[in-house]
Image (cartoon, rainbow, N blue to C red; front, side):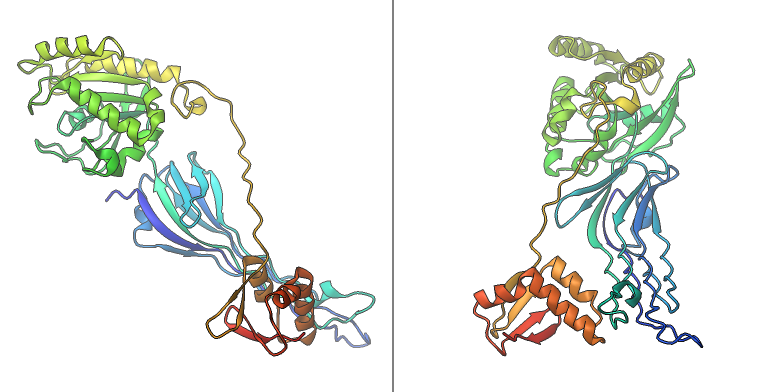
Length: 429
């Protein structure tokens, strides 16, 4: 089964907790703090494996969770960092955050890696909080929560050549003739339900990967037929081969077929208009094809090269393969422009993330003040409320963030309830 789009939940590992401990060896009076730091949580990493060509492994496993770091230990021993969770994906995989729409990773080359969810930092042990003023602190941090995301994983097949055209024009037959691929072939629409890949070898020792994409129809960019589901795979191809039924066996005009398919491509992605395109005038062994080809060329006005072929008798197949190989040599894979037209220089993209407000104050129906926000929630989760000094430190941090003043401005008074996550506090002015 071919799977090319899935929704997945990923959760990186939490950091291990820091420890409150003291040296207690014989003959070492007042040995001081000796609590170690917790280990870092596991990152969730996607790594390209060129042996994969579908997202089938994600169909039955939609949750990926990294392990948490080990807690800190006595004698200043650091907790063990968790091993990253590495998830293999096929080349051409893109990862997008479903909540923000941000593109997290675009993975195209073998062994390329991307951190999809960052593991939490290990909490600090009480040794880290020792100062001349407080040489034996009774305070340690909990581990930082690991990042969690709901992501969309999408596969865009990486092929040198994409076969496009209406259903039943002979794309699958053509692919089966020029490569070792064995797609299902039948005389009805949408025989091909998933893209088929084949490696094509020319007689002059050149080779390339060709993809037979499911038949497009009018309205495909709006979701009609199977076209929209697989149009994404056209984006990665360097050259398009437009297969046209020149015998008009289904009563359609070949030139109108050509125009409609190109309109669908441009409406899906305007960049595809600049993609190099060759026309394979197929079924030239059938009656009426010669007359239709002449009319087609007149209307086309030499805008694209046309090659007469018959996938059934293999007439003209050698010539079009040489032409495809020549065109691919003009567009080196590693320097191909997004438009598929001209070489480009490699660019480094820097993403700017606007810093969120440290906290937001709202009111519940019962009158309680509710604190929320990524920064304040993380601070709360990393505080160990089993130690008084940790509670005092948390109160100081809230005051420094401006929470107290903000609550007063909202009208909070002594004894009012302040809610943070699942916990409630009493406001004291």
